[in-house]
Image (cartoon, rainbow, N blue to C red; front, side):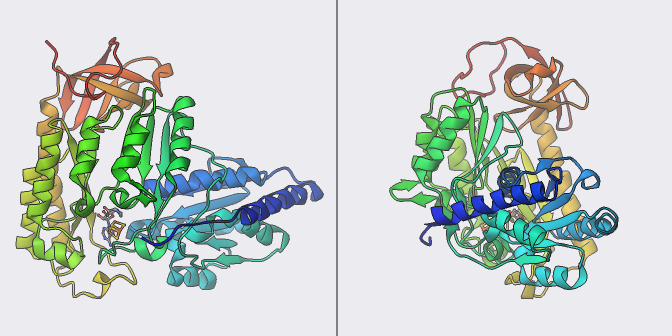
Length: 481
Ligand code: SAH
Ligand code: SF4
């Protein structure tokens, strides 16, 4: 892992000066503070970045609104992992061209997709109505870039790569008052052959444990009920004497009633020490997202994943030995270049053997600059779609069979949102969504629910009153008498 450099206090102070200059700019133009619409594509890491972007915008005097139509500035935080996310960004931005002309809407794009030189070039040439483009390394410089755009009256492009930096102490506007993202590291050093992340997010760098522990203590004190630690490969977290299990243990020692989650765990770095820490944890959710990607050893090697099917299955078995009630989820890519149907069937065998609670399934799509993009890819798209459907059908049947065993059991849920079938929806420690009736004041609270019905993977329940927030591993499934 490369050395972590902090963005200097002088640089952060310089950005505060730009924020102050923007305030003066609004005042000089006798302008109401402008309103920003921030739209996020992609993963939780992007959502966490958007919370910092909103914090910085607020510091620059912006208010917020929920659509580009009402906004003075539309900021799209983009994703490069999924192809359709890229198409959607171009489509959505194209549709705003009219608002740029009629109302002077300013349009800005940032994040992984625009960090790629070919995308920035396409925006520069073919999207002249886009005002501001900045990559993942320039997030903390948003005040300066906005000032250049507004006061300088020019288009601003900033996608330079500044390796190994972390900006601490940025202002944050969190989306939720009870669920928090806590990025513990940035970047990735793994270079899986299909993946663009290392190219757009740079090398792995970890945040200091003192900073993370302080932030987590603050979140628990502020009443947050769930903290999700984020990183592309949390198992390679390292800062001084701290590895990931040690960081997790110290976070788990914080007093309070909350769940700790983390993602993503790379199987090649998932150690018995981590499983032991999870099993002994008071707050650590018994849920492991352990992306396998595929079941064939040849394809796994071509993907540069660093493990075999047998090693993965042994790891999954060990995890269940430590935690018999563990729920596992995974990511799978269907149709990697050169994958044959026989090799794909090994993925089906693996999925059947592990018994995942749910899967995130992706059709392979080539990403410019990755090694896989240059590999021969003879299988027709329609054929890959058939495989994809076969996998989805298997997983749906497995998940439904798992859910069919739940009626009568009691789950502890974090009540998250209004439901679709019933008043409320909550998520269990193992990430099962259950709907139930109750007052909206329960949103953001832990509740106990007895599962009454399972239809496929849709679960309904009824709320029961039950004390004791942490029965052996908080949300552990308990059998009713
Ligand atoms: N760091 C995480 C995942 C990051 S990307 C890990 O290693 O597990 C999230 C998921 O997107 C990946 O797990 C993979 O399944 C999928 N993905 C990434 N690149 C892809 C591509 N080129 N085509 C299809 N799916 C891809
Ligand atoms: Fe991409 Fe692999 Fe890194 Fe995950 S571990 S972000 S899939 S390169």
